[in-house]
Image (cartoon, rainbow, N blue to C red; front, side, top):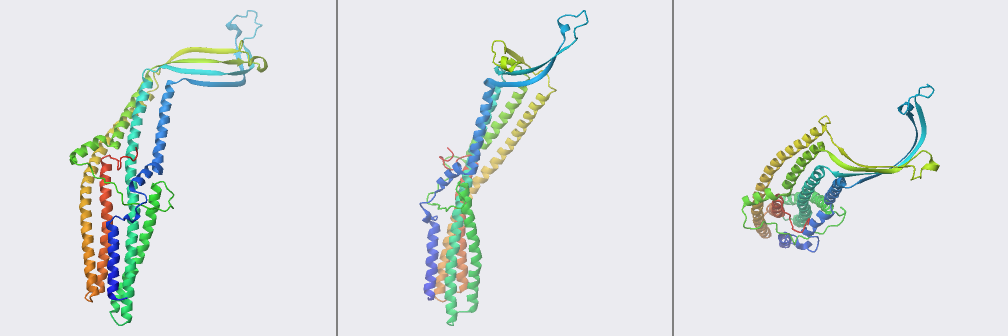
Length: 455
């Protein structure tokens, strides 16, 4: 191996990897795209299934409200023995003094039957309960929409985490291979009496320093792969092939000013809508509790058997049938102000939520303003990282040519390679931050990252 061949190999390896990075690691095309990853996360992850369970619970909460409009049917069956004191003087007065003053009957008693109650008119309480349930349903839907938007952003982070850590590992492995070639070349030259031992030691030290870094990069890539699998709802040990060739453009539509985006977000952002609806639900609950002071009017019916002897009377519907039908009115006139106190608790919760909503709206404005500036800065940083990478590649090329011509030092070549390696890392980070900042801006504005996700 001569000096020219080694230098040419270094340049070829760096050029190939630079092309790979510039193309956005399209070598993995054909795998899982970012759109597919987001869709999988919003359908299969544990976070998505927890949101589905909230929907299920709300469904049964609404069904419980409907129960107030439907009849309640209860069956009963009793068997026992008891005593019933009876005073004969309630019907006639004994003047002889021979009759007992009290007669106590000890009997076996058996009863079974049905009881039915049905609300006829609740003086607005049932309608108020339906209204509160509607607010809660809308609040939950808005909360779920927001949670799915944030889940999309987390799946993007996991996707790019796996892509970036894998690319970083590939960069280090390529650099390690070239360093080994450089060390082998310098050691060969030194054995033949050319070069300095100090240069060989510097190259060896640089090589040894890369191996721990490569091991950490391998660890990070494995952890990122497992984390990405988890958020996609897949077994964490599965292989993961990601396609970075089809990345959605998360840019905002043109023609709308930043101030208009802020106003639109504060009006339409799902989490802010959810807080407003929750506040209305708490106010409705306070009103519903106060309505407990209103009367309730309903129907009650009962039919069954009351028997004293099992063999003779338990199925005698002619003589032992007992029944009752009628309507009733119940009215809570005074309960020690317990109901009023409970209503005031809900009213206080509503006021607290209103204050919290104002706070969240202010924080949302700060978040949006920051995200707008971060997206603009990330675009500039990406362009700067590309220019720095190109400059580092040019510097490495010149250093390689000088080294081939016998004018450069090995320290200069090692420094140039390290600079190019760091520049490639910078491009990876800037590319991810550019995509991520645009996606974060859309989420800050209350928008989905891709339209079909979560629909």
